[in-house]
Image 1 (cartoon, rainbow, N blue to C red):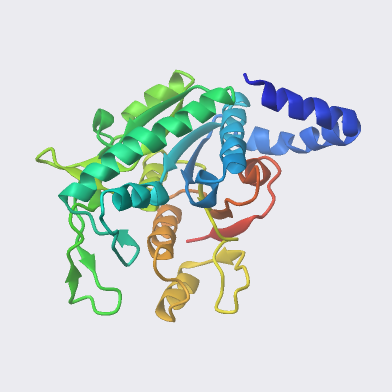
Image 2: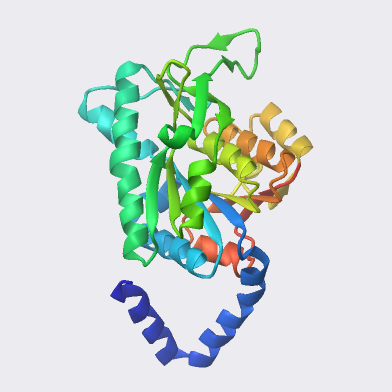
Length: 303
């Protein structure tokens, strides 16, 4: 355990010990509700690049585990991949929110996600007092994939070639279950493997949704860098149904990188995940506020 959480606690106790105690008591219903349950957390957006938010996220995940909840982290890494490609003189390209991935880009994706980004997250969680283990979708046969056939959102007759972008065929959560039973926090890089041992870049939102379904997660929480899903007027939409999502996609309100996020969230909700939240990752300790104090910090997706 690091000194930072203890220092914060000491300061809070000195400032108003009764208020702090009352706040902890208010977390008891959330702890009881989710103790022993799996929460899949998609970690991305500003929460991955702002140092203070990185620390807060790691503390949240470590604390959830310490009170008996089973967090599983699935991370993105778009900004880090873009920076690495730029150093190589390559320009990233996206189609309908999916990164076009040629062979060279796939190599960059693998070493950035499964190396740099994943190990940084693992280290931060451990520094916060948790025990984390990094996996890619190749480890333990976690994510079997095939090349994604991406149909044009406006004209389904058109199929876009996005290279080594994967569509998940099967999820085998055995390795994750083993880590959970051993008291570890799994941190997953969304890299799949194919039938011929090729690698696939899998959208992290899509991977998180599939893992939440396979693990029968109680919640899927997707951290992003906006307040949640916004309507055409820029106002937060606190709850969405499948019909709402279809209408928002049709009028262009939901577009770009939000498309796979919303699609994954809806698929998870339809497949039995009890609650799917798109959270504002810019809010410090957003996970604890949503899970333990059950504050509404974004958009809930219902099937």
